[in-house]
Length: 620
Image (cartoon, rainbow, N blue to C red; front, side, top):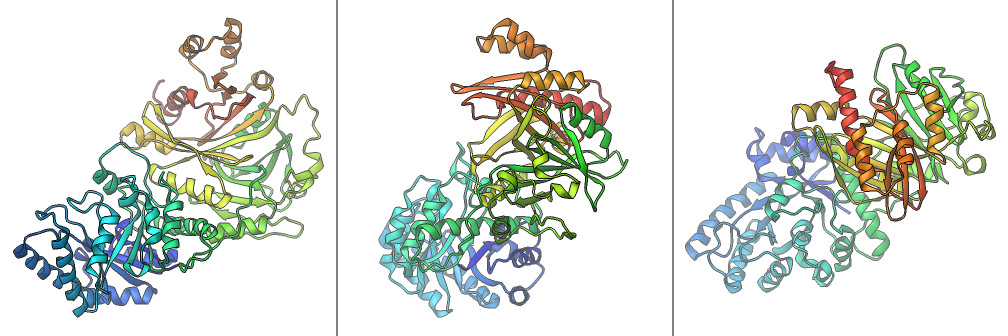
């Protein structure tokens, strides 16, 4: 697969975009016209720089409003087109994207379009160039891929083909099945883009909300399978118009883009193994069997360890060669705490380990998906946990199944054995699992984080939800496996309150238990500071559900929240914020499968007040 990316996907100057694309591992780029026009570098310098970086220049785009016009207008359009061919010769590239006409089309006649496109093809041939004709979803007369392809077939010129763009096809709800029957010699270029499902006009949807494959709601797996079945073997390129991408770190965005292409290609390979489009095949995803440990870093050690003790954890030991690391255990739940000293630094989630059958293969898959290995010295008698960096800079560890499939192969480094982990009696080990990890990301990197975990670990994304907070809507989405679940939240950023909340929005660990009341009572007895839940919540709860007054009084006393679905119940409480993180404890009854998101507005409002008070000293 020849991987390519349009420069319009990336932030920065054209030179910075080329550098980022090459560093990420792309083989080629599309040159977006505006990027070249605003560049201080000559076409020859751009050509030479791309060659130095090992990048091919695959497509110059876009050329607009060529066809469906009166003859005098068309002749002037040919003049414009010829100037672009001359420019492309200076760039050392030979293919241009011609879009179906939107603004100046006045002649709705396929015969005219065929004659005009053939004339353009003859002009292209004189310059050794090729035209890739694309149907814009909002084109005035030509707006479907089948129509554009039919015109190309009638033109029947070796220098004229079609460009297939997944957004223009799927945004209209068009069925891509017919692509499989196209003549591959007539498909000159392939552009890929995903997008979230949105109720809005196609043009603003396209210009502002495209995302990389796997980060939206289009069925790109099926789309790519049809392309592969056609026999197409040309460039596979990303064309993403997204306001947040244009503001994000250029290097990080490029890596995210290539990861999305590799992930999609891997899915296609298994469905169309005989395709001439040579697609990379990854090692199978190692289905996580659970969370092995979660790692926190803090400059407020006493605050964190006190909260863990109050929740029933005990100190298991200190690391043999890195004594700043402590292991806190309860049942099969392991929390590693890194003490950075008395800095007062906020507590944050810095790493987590997942239990997999083959840790080496899992790490290899992650690195094939553009993850970077963490440089780590493994001492004598210490376990290699194959850590890689996540997009946010935290560390993901791959841990073997260990003792009875419970992981924890590394615990001897802390001075105790795996079979000792659950040696506490059943009364004190009330917490027995990590229910899920709740990650928080800036809005422009949330989709990247979801794609990273879903592609590396083989998890599936759930439907997104939008939760109201005092600072605006919080975008939340779960990515799930059978035994490992994450949620990813993106806090609002577009106001003073939103910027403050996004900066301090906490991540959290949700612990699972069989008796939330026992955990809460023990924690309160030990002095745990819970997140206070307002009385209005419990009045509303009594109105929403047919709950007995004695039960309402019981959960109210302990600041426990309640949610219910047709399948079961979810009872949970939150600790007060601990810097940039906090703990939640949840009990699932019956077949409840959610995350208690009906109570998220309550939590967000309470945490907003607490964080504002802590950071700014403003009364709640």
